[in-house]
Amino acid sequence: MRIVFVSNRLPIVAERGDEGWTTHASAGGLVTALAPLLKRWGGMWIGWAGTAELQGAELAAATREFGERVGYDVAAVPLSTEDYGFFYQGFCNEIIWPLFHDLQSFCNFVPEYWTSAHKVEEAFADVVERNVGPDDLLWIQDYHLMGLGQTLIRRGLRNKLAFFLHIPFPPPDIFCKLPWRLDVLKGLLHYQVIGLQTRHDLNNLSDCVHALLPAAERQEGASELRFEIEGRESIAGVFPIGIDFDEFAGVAATSAVEQQVAEMRQSYAGQQIILGVDRLDYTKGIPYRLRSFGRALERYPELHRKTTLVQIVVPSRETVPEYQNLKGEIERLVAQINGKYTQPGWVPIHHVFRSVERQELLAWYRLADVGLVTPLKDGMNLVAKEYCACQIDMNGVLVLSEFAGASERLGSAAVLVNPYDIDCVAAAIPLAIIMTPEERRPSMEKLRTVVRVENVYWWLGQFLQACGVALNGKMSPTTAGPAGEPAG
Ligand code: GDG
Image 1 (cartoon, rainbow, N blue to C red):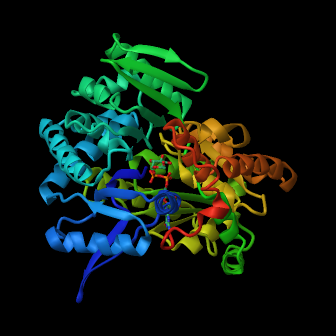
Image 2 (image 1 turned 180 degrees about the horizontal axis):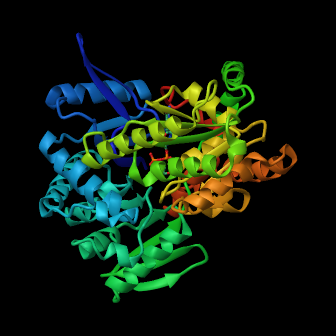
């Protein structure tokens, strides 16, 4: 039996140079975790290669060559620029993403987006059909492909179908705004195993089934829900995604990172560093965070000259108008706050608008006295976990949004805040900063224990067990080995 992993994007970055197309592995926790699993288990990854320019024989050759290099099979779904625009920028980024993050006013319910989502599902199904064996487990990832399972079943595929949702599942009041709510929910219930990040998401899914599909039978188990509809059974469970803790902690302890941290400490001598790291996305709550920091400077002048907010923003989805507006809003707020409070030798906000090298990112995590993670809503938020893993000196404080999935397991040892409450977040900043090392250490120890135990390999093992696949210790971090190519 193979595991066939299907996601919107392949873990490939394809670039055209003077000598034709070259490919390398993209960065990210999921790639690092899944690549060794696919390699060992003899698996395959199916998805879009990230560019419509690479097509036909060139696409097949580039993905085959990439697959040989990384040690697992890869198959690309060819999509036109127009399909990808309507499906990815439209259906995914203008409908499902904002709606599932409770931001319905950002939604643009264009009927053609829904039509294009079906077209793209058929394109994915073509590639799956051509590549899948009768006993393979199909594991479909994330909100882009919620309906793929149903399309595959309609085509007569009898494989085990599993699905994992990386983003939150909304409550019925929000979900019911979706014009195609019934189709999407029914489509989801075609998967035999449905993985969600938190208990809260599972309850929301259950409430939506109750509201929209009252004929579906529901049975509540200790940690999962069973639904039966039209003779099919689905099990939905909670599988909080983790990170490769040992890898993060190990790299954070290297002399290269240590040296970078020492240099940073020198340039920030006498300062407490507050760190925010986010993709450019309105769900991450960056403007609210900046306003909160501005409020903290206004209310607590003792922070002046002693506290710096380092806000790293990684460019993302920049062609979508909301994201361009967000970039402008962040720049305006940074300029306003810095304009008001900067003094000789102290600029309160250091705004980094680019993707930083992984080693530098880990150095920031290790250096920061406070990790300020305040998304308005987030499926999990890996930054919160990565910050804890890199706090090997155990001297940091995690300030965490109560609306991040991570708060379900980390909330009791973090300083929990409502990211919309500017006064509350502003008050949490001096509270975290004046905590003594004796107060910080026990909380950070607790956080690190959860992040270490519930790591990405644990997540994989739990999910695959629910699919009836036992890893038998094959995927412990020590046996996992490198992920083909270094991630990031
Ligand atoms: C989705 C869900 C869920 C960030 N800046 C840099 C950089 N990063 C890396 C981080 C982290 C990743 O990007 C961001 O992960 P998040 O979990 O915070 O957010 P999403 O991208 O929205 O992911 C989310 C996740 O899926 C997994 O299920 O947690 O809720 O929305 O790994 O390290 N990496 C590098 N340079 C940067 O500047 N190298």
